[in-house]
Amino acid sequence: MSGAATAHPAALGAAGGAGGARVATGELDLTHGVVLYLEGISVSFDGFKALDNLSLSIDAGELRCLIGPNGAGKTTMMDVITGKTRPDAGTAFFGQTIDLTRLSEAQIAQACIGRKFQKPTIFERHSVFENLELSMKADKRVRKTLFAKLSADEHQRIQDTLKLIHLEGESARTAGLLSHGQKQWLEIGMLLMQEPRLLLLDEPVAGMSDEETERTAELFLSLAGKHSLVVVEHDMAFVSKIARKVTVLHEGSVIAEGPMEQVQNDPRVIEVYLGR
Ligand SMILES: Nc1ncnc2c1ncn2[C@@H]1O[C@H](COP(=O)(O)OP(=O)(O)OP(=O)(O)O)[C@@H](O)[C@H]1O
Ligand SMILES: [Mg+2]
Image (tube, rainbow, N blue to C red; front, side):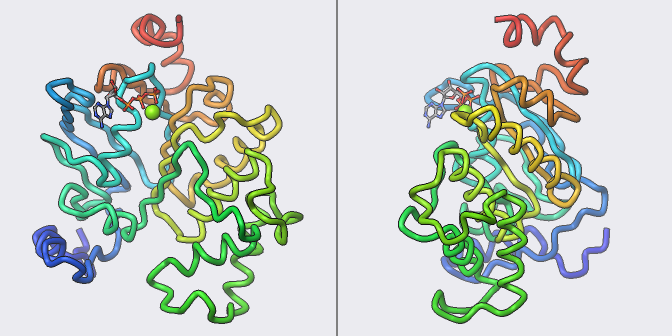
């Protein structure tokens, strides 16, 4: 382990308790090639186990698909990773050294875990370009006011992102006027402006047209490698298109994991999910 610029987990806990103190989340330590490591995570809601001893590990640069029936705990798992829900038991590490269970939701966002909810949250009255600009400047590592002029580099980054999310031609358009699929892409672009190391995407193609779904598959494939992605989806055609490794959740635990063909032919997976 390099240990260099990385804060000790205990230091993170102390900063977290100090209310508003700057959190030294430090460098993401990917020494062992693992970006996210969950072990034995359990979450109960009034005695009901939404997550039951869940263990999962995501490699840096991986594109992981997470599937499973309604209520399996997929969204709850994302809630745990992003600090929205505290686990009753278990450990959750971002890289080798960042203990997610000791950080607040805001600190986790700062540590570069980006999350996309099902409903796009964009600034409807602003242009597409401004949406990307605003999300870049919301990044506190860029210490500028919202009204500061963009540098040439920043301008270029926005252009690059527009291209990536297929909205080059819509740059000046009011975001509220975009199609549902385009809004989803814009939100993904907004997340990308903050340079996340891990992206969590919950049902990203729900409500998209076939063509939009196809383009989203291409987008995710192009992001893999540079970013680590966890994608939750019920659309199996979409999952088949992007899947490398697939994890199947059922009643809060992993019941299968592996390549799509293997998972698809797993009798237990067919019984609880795919066969229905
Ligand atoms: N805040 C909460 N309070 C009580 N129960 C909850 C809460 N959040 C989730 N649950 C329950 O936990 C279980 C897991 O829910 P979760 O939303 O994680 O499932 P999911 O796999 O995302 O399902 P879907 O595919 O329908 O989105 C469900 O039974 C749900 O009702
Ligand atoms: Mg869900």
